[in-house]
Image (tube, rainbow, N blue to C red; front, top):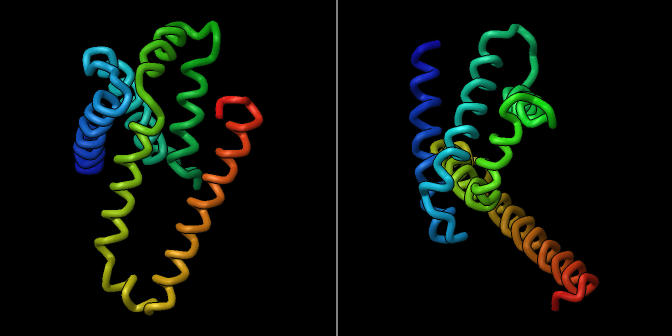
Length: 150
């Protein structure tokens, strides 16, 4: 269990650093403002992963992380307002980018398994990505026009 915790901490530190840089460059939030929020998010993730390992239930760790984050930020919960204030300094896209990159690296490690699926898989994957991008762009266009932003 200690080895798992060490690996989780290392991954959270690396992702936290990338989030900090992305938040600073992309959203002009100074690192000194974002560090408390990133630390809180990392600690909630670490606690959720540890709870997942300790409990014998067959529930994904992301559920524990979500529930823990929800409970800690319930209005009236001691320290909840401070957690919300700190985490508000961390932009969602600054979080999503390194996590998706990490997922891509994890998939890339099993490239030999992926290559066994054949060339048709690559074409289907590209079509899915293109469709998702175009669908998101159309939805964004409609919503922004309805709001009168563009």
